[in-house]
Image (cartoon, rainbow, N blue to C red; front, side, top):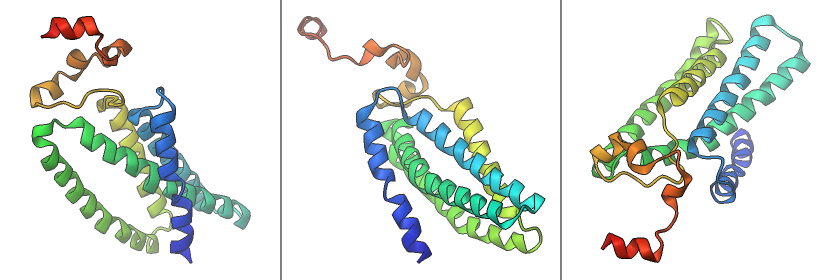
Length: 188
C-alpha cells in the first residue's frame, strides 16, 4: 500500500516538469533544483524538530505529511532537474562519461541511504537530519556553482563548457533568437 501511495504522489511530477518546461521562460533548471532541494531541506528539518522536541501526535502527523511531501519533491522534481542538468552541463565529447559517473554515484547513494534508518535505533531523528543536511548542502552548492542552462545551447567542446557565459551570453535574451535572413547571408 505504501508503494502505491508513493507512486500516486509522484504521478504529478512529469506533468509539472512539462508544464514548467513549455509554459514559462522564467523558471529554469537552476530555480527548479534550488527550490525543490530547499523545500526538501525545510520539510525534513521540520520533522527533525518535531521528533527532537517530542511534540504530540497531531504535530507528528503534520511532520509525517511534510516528510512525504519532501520525499515526493526529492524523487520527482529533483530527479528531473538532476537528469536535465547532467545532460546540459557537460560538453558533448564527455557527456556520456559524465552521465555514467553520476549514475554510478547515484546508485551508491541509493544503496547507502536506506541504511541510515538503522541509526534511528540509537537516535530516532537521525534519518531526518541526515536528509535535511544533504538537501541543504545540495542547495548551497547549486546556488554557488551551477549556472542556468534553460534556453542555453549545449556545449560541444570542453572549451565551450568552460566559457559558457561568454560564448552563449546567458544573461542576454537576444542571444537565442533565430538568425534573420540578413544574418544568415552574412554568416556564409
